[in-house]
Length: 420
Image (cartoon, rainbow, N blue to C red; front, side, top):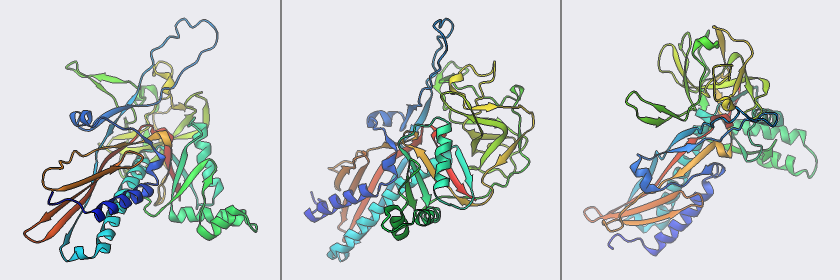
């Protein structure tokens, strides 16, 4: 083939793939679901993934009347990220193999960054466990994140925390001081390499591209938490339209009515007066305010929030296994208090099963005049490199592509740590 890759280019591609795989730091710490690509094309790249079941137990031996149906909740996962790095090299530039290699390295670095950023963006925008702290001090900050996850029943393994450089180094400073002793590996690493490592059951990572969130500007916002207010949510697997068609329901989000949405922004974190979080399995009140995130602001009086308000009040919610909060005192004018009171970095944390990566695949023809090389990482992320020469101007076009999706299956198993 006229555009075939040379032996040197193939070796360079193998090296590039290895480096690309090494750079997938954050995406290695989420679950992976491989899909049938033919099916995905026929469903517009959307597949519904199941959320975890939550069981209900009863006392005694007589279970008459306790045989309830379980509602299988699902969330839509989309392979929607199509990332590509194209570049062009002239016949004279190709004389310098080092320059070609540097361009390939830059392409690899950018695509790996795109995948890591996608994971962070999903966790940062949809994780609902919002924690507000003063300046990063170290162990106590991470220990509070652990406490919040433990209290709400998040599995105790495979937990990850990604921190901005400033916040991460603040924690390293605390470790360097409080564990200081000659030959102590923890304090030596914190002092010499600003390295934190595993803290309070979390694997920690330092970011150079952490997201920032502006301070919330909403004030005087109220919501009706009485049963008559219509803001309680009942999870359901499917819904039936007026025409009789049945479709899946995304139970991660809820539209609620408030007195005003003035100055409320997507991503704001808030609590509601007298609404406490519960342990997702035992349903015991944690005594701590339930935290919510703003997903969208569709009108002057409605908000799309996550997670939904599921208090399991008597006669309101028939699917008590998905209760996620307890209202200790209802009110028609319950105050909403915003947590992101100053601009700060969104330091994301999550359980591995909360976020899922869906590798995709391009069906690039190999007999259409362009040379094609493809290879997959251990996670299944496929890199496709194509090359085509233009005889008119003696220039060669290259491009490096990948296709993938990221979904937050369980927003209550992920969240943000904000230092204000």
